Length: 314
Image (tube, rainbow, N blue to C red; front, side, top):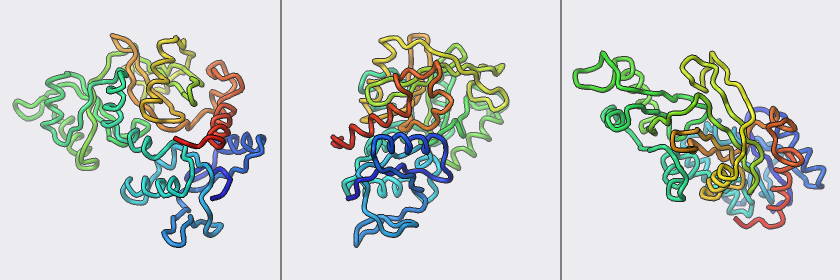
């Protein structure tokens, strides 16, 4: 097994990956960006083939967001199998495959967090309009989204509508959109909408440290923080001891080394909406008032990776 660090990525490099490589180099750690879309595992002889030929597995590999969100080679199970082959070759993954699997399935993630005492929205899998109608009957206000989605793509909010089939809680347009979403995704995640003050909170946790914590504040008339026509506004969020404990508990419950967490301020306190098993965009936060680390978010990740190279056990 090689002694290098691979920063697994897709498409093109960016400031975050380049800066992380530079930070590792400053520590004397050999690292490189590796395009996961160019890597193919070999069964025998063992190794991983790419533009530089057949290579040994690295000591550690960081799975960046685009490896998960830009997967194109068939079923996601194939992605997890390839990453598992890296682990089985002795590579310490950040984050481990088992944790990625839990996180990428929003139903399973919610169940895992709830079992650890983390407040999450009521969450169900739905595979038909009738399933969604039962959610509408029980909750009144429902968020429906892909089980393995990201960036709010294909996320819809539903309330009992008008103009649909007699006796149906789905309006005409809602019924049409839902039909297409179910045709595309087959099974969806439904969650009870959590009333909030028109903002959500985004936090980055690296190890046991909350590296950043800030509000995404809506500028849209309907209070949505995911509107393409009304970009959200960022503002510092107070990090209380209770909130910090909630964030770190969420990361530990999912077996993660680092994560980005979305939280909303519900009527009964903070509710964890989603835990993303990567830290994807930190350039706008690095070194600003939103950065809660002593030396920067890049340095915090370098410190984490350095520690894991010394003590790689999950």
